[in-house]
Image (cartoon, rainbow, N blue to C red):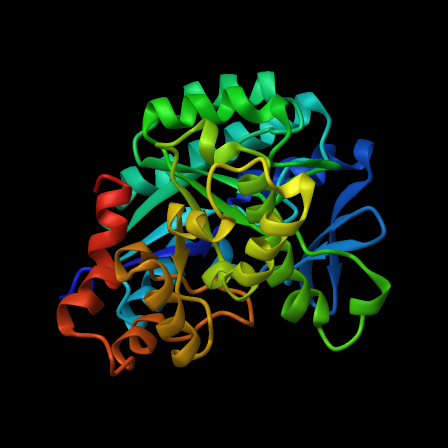
Length: 331
């Protein structure tokens, strides 16, 4: 039985079998494969990027629902994660996105009170991405769009992506971001690629959206940052200092820190005081539950974490657990 209190996890990853099968069948032509190692399944992109282990819980919706019930989570907003689809050629990129978007819609139709989904787009070709956006937006259960924090060698402020943003704004579909793991020699030890790399990758993407004019160009576009905004909140003073003293930062109509309330954020901070700081900074109405399901670093009890924040009232907790996301996603 679903939990008695309405809850939605907005950061919950899903690998449909159709997506994995397409990579296994066609990925080799672009240096990507599905590999087995240590009795586990991984997706290998080139030499440096490996995603996994892809456990059955990523794929099997029945297993997922049992775990959701145990966690007290009523609904998952299903999203793809790395390696996304940007490594693919145009034909395979479209195929992968269509397979993924059809799968999240099918999950919603099979379990309408438990699953919605965020569409994946072949952003390496913005023309094709716009076409798939228009198709996916009509699918039952598609409530947003999921993008990586960079598209190959292009930042999210690249003007080629503006038609996609314009259409998302017109459709009222929020964009949720996810890092793609910065590969750097200094982060190969100690899992620093995730512990440090992902939070700073999120901050970099947010800064490109701010300084690159995306938030000004699309004032009604909602963009959600993962991992409680990563390093962005603690960099607000440095951003504002750059705005004051650097010519290349003075073009904004207001200080960069004032844009922080334009984003929404998940709760993946792993620390009550950090979440309280974020709430004080941007407002409780900009915060939604996230878990990073079901990687090993994920919250095992995302609802319990929110319930344990003593400074929050019952009404504020319900905002974070359901109301804010329900409003944003038009549930």
